[in-house]
Length: 220
Length: 269
Ligand SMILES: Nc1ncnc2c1ncn2[C@@H]1O[C@H](COP(=O)(O)OP(=O)(O)O)[C@@H](O)[C@H]1O
Ligand SMILES: [Mg+2]
Image (cartoon, rainbow over all chains, first blue to last red; front, side, top):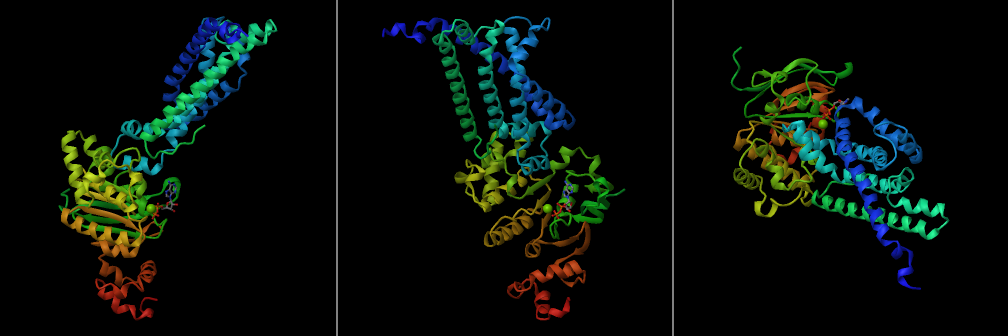
């Protein structure tokens, strides 16, 4: 068989382009979710009464089936509609739970004796947070970002259904045309992306963990 | 009111009863400058709570604790705590900081220059008997329990606070290392003239370190006095603790009164 006939090669330019779109959607969504989610996760370690509502909402958001959420957002004026923007919003909402929860878990699992020692020596809450709690929770927080990224890469394939583009384009087209090669041209790169993202962020986690020496990591 | 020069900390009718559950009650005592007051008591007797009332990790539900003549709740809590070194069981060191950063923590927060901090850290490591060149760059998990305790003491001393609070700091050590570090600490305390409040459940440790012993029993201070006073006390909890000394007392020349009585079991029972 001629190599140029092999489907992954044949579709290569398109695959690259859709991979770019895919990554763009995921990166923006997870980026926004991280920027909002980490502060929210920190907030609920300080303001106990916000904990239940915030974790509750994030929980509910994540249990909504993705196709239903996309469908719902299409009908919402201004922020919704057809296109990448809607996909980004949906993926952001999905990414909140792992990021908020891991930030919260990471910070609350810092040994209370360490926190108490810091407070007892006269560290302010801000100093304690920035110098002790966040550094010690960092591997947890990153694990949350990693999980969010992997989930988002998966769900982003469905975003093609609402015209957002991305690797899902091949999958849906392949299903419509009963063309397995076309389906795989979307599925295989998407799977590889997810694996690479997982691996890359794990690597970062381990780096930070080594630097942070002893902090135990559990997380997701 | 004129503040008595020698009193650093004063408990005035202090109780701490969150949700109406009395944890410590009616504490009335003063701590004098330069003394080592040992709070002795079994676990759950309220020693840690009493200590946290001093650096305002807790505030009394009744009465007041005065530090330098001013009630703790009128102090800026950060300012208050910077005057009080705090050492707790080994977990208190920051695991992600090197020894150098751990010891230099408070000076760094106080805005000292890096060079000053380094000089101070090295000075303190020498003081607690650890070779600076060898230990400064290590992380707490790369130290033995005894070394970690020394670092904990060095960290508390870093900004030269007049008062030290120590909550069972040597509890996790083996008996030999513990005795070593106890006697070193006693020498250090006398040399530096620090006021120390030291919590322990170990009567032997209390005797090694104490200027005075305060015995706590279910949230109350039941005996307060010199080690000699303590040995003479007929308080049931004091008798119970003295029981623990039996057997080691005969080899301990520094407790003459006790050795005399040791042969006579009935004397305290
Ligand atoms: N945060 C807390 N909430 C409720 N009870 C507590 C708390 N901390 C300590 N206690 C109770 O207060 C009592 C005294 O505790 P503590 O001061 O820690 O004793 P010690 O240091 O002498 O072992 C114990 O009965 C303990 O169970
Ligand atoms: Mg205690």
